[in-house]
Length: 486
Image 1 (cartoon, one colour):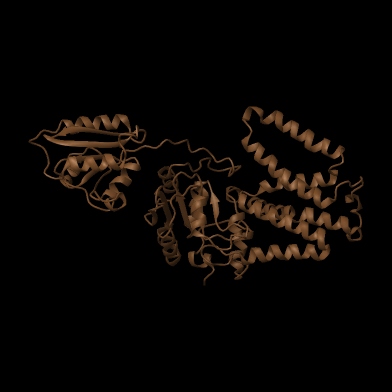
Image 2 (cartoon, helix red, strand yellow):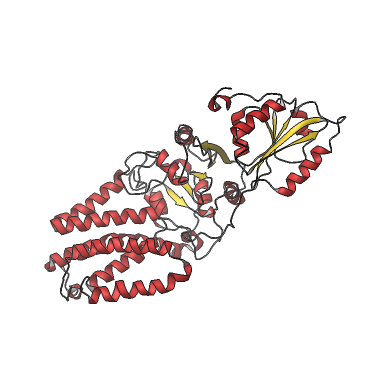
């Protein structure tokens, strides 16, 4: 017999014995306890069923088996096509004759039926995946609005979007990536609004992905789609776990990519204004939504500038505005301020990681202990000054005003660079740090190779007003104008 890689592209035989011999060898039926196969009689002919235990509904399988066994020899159809049309009491039925498609279907949980003498395998898609409820995501919560969220099952996620967009122009295009994993990927877009040239570019990129598996789901796919300028920390994609946010982006002409086993989706093309936007902006009246949006912009700016500005003013006290002399550090500085800031930047991430891995029953006592030891005692011991602790506490909390983890860490990395430059070069270093951040943001290119700061560059006053202000009638953006091409 030829190699498995070659055989997988060949067509199945009409002999049940030959098909079973190949199947049992390839799927290692004698070793895999969860791969079930059973030989039965269907209309006087030998037949065999294959299924993955846990993916198929037991009650449905029992009813199908009973139906097949009740088919008499007189009523037995002549070929697989006739049988699939009139003798399979199920909705999702398909026929395949190549081993590659048959094996992929089995590994995906589809029920297989081989009948001796038939040149095609009958596929019955009665699978069901273990899934959790569509609760509101922990990170993308809103004060008002829908409380559902994406889950790890891709069919549920597409249904959540279909529920919101009942249009025949909505397209859910299925693709696969990964030699071993064959991960399901869905391109979701509005056919009458999407940029078809960009869509074809993304489709080609996914088809040409040469990886063994998308181990980290959507992050693995994102790194395959964009492998340039990895050193630029600003996000190239927008991630969301909210179906309403994804649906709004689809209506604006964007492409949403869903990856199986991932509760978040990728949205592209993306600008910095898309990343900053949140669902709460549109679940409140225009004036409230505008206020919330400006609040996030201002707080994001403060999280970046507060600690470098404080460090600069401590090195050059004469720059402190009149009336703000109280910000000066009054206590003895035992550890240089730059080292205090850098240590606390690392310590905050350490506490964040500890909080993620702490069991719920221990989170409260450990939080109290961390607050006492790292807060009051660290100041009293002389390691840190209270002013430094105050500003770093603000930065740590304010980072959570952004729903994007990627943007939060991008600002963190830029802040650390600015702190180091300010400590080494003073005022010139402070200015260079700000300039470097602007350069990283302006030169960051998305998958679509378009401006990351559109509609500032290229300038579009109408679109900029929509990005800064929550208008009364948000509506869908012009799909051409949205991209900034025209």
